[in-house]
Image (cartoon, one colour):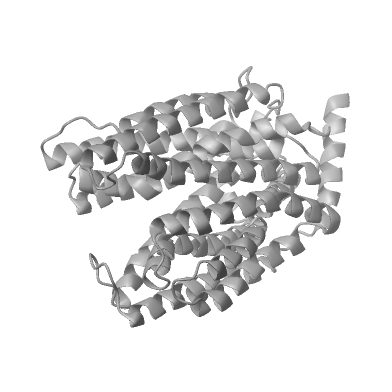
Length: 461
């Protein structure tokens, strides 16, 4: 149990792996489906089936990986070996994903996408679940944990920028953005860059966190997987936090999926304008806001800032997005500035989850960070799938015409209602649920004191 104050390079080194992890996630989420349907020539329904199977496996495998890392004992630690191995596998898998061979049949293309994307998601699980669990174990101090997850979110946003901008920038530099050869080249080169990023970032994290992954497990208190899994889902404190975060994540996914439709068909803005003038400033402000949220959580605790951050984001979304005038960049840019500030509060949620794990250890005597974070990530992935499904359903309901370069003003107004009050509802609802989270800062401090005494008694025996 680490009570010492972590040096900034260690916290930065830990968070650095998130750059590659998030870059892969954004790169595949934005570009994969279009690449395989329009360039590789795979039928859209078959591509959707392949991606759905892979995502379901990804979600199911998260708690399994968490359980495995919880019970791993090596001289390198119980989390770090998976960060190293997962980084190498993920690097190779991304290269294969965007460099498919020439395959004539639809079945062959389907099998290739399914196989390689299963490998991508398996490798992602191997690295990401132990990595986020390690963040809760680097320090036992509450404020230090918030700082650790702040650095993780900071590098996650750098990964978002890489996964989102690099492929588009390469394609733009090649000239004709509609030429098939240029699209193939841009995706292949971007895949090589993202592959290098995940490889380098995972190795750096593995190296920098050396000696910080020393927690030993007491095998006499280890429960069978399904019993342990069930006991976590009976933890009402965890369920409140998970439910609040899942609801907010549906809103965040809903926002990402509908954004380009809203900006193009409601505000008349081009994709390049949106990426450079709105999304890029949003992520930059979000990264800069992380220090503020770390500071304020140290001053007044975690619960109040987390609530007001998510609630403020929801209120802003509900009010402003239906009101923006057509063709103007300045109003959505101002909203992106304030939205970036509010969105930075999300780091506190991950930090609060480590407090819940402390409370679980207080009750059970077993350290189960991996299982908790695995179930946490599973819930997030299912909520992302649900958010995407809602988007497609609502686009049909409001009369959106696929393949049309223009939409009716009525469709634009309905998009504004979805992007504004529709998205904002989930943020506000999630924040209200979070108000029922029962673990106070004072109670958690008391739990940590008891855990510290237990540790000292073991060490003196």
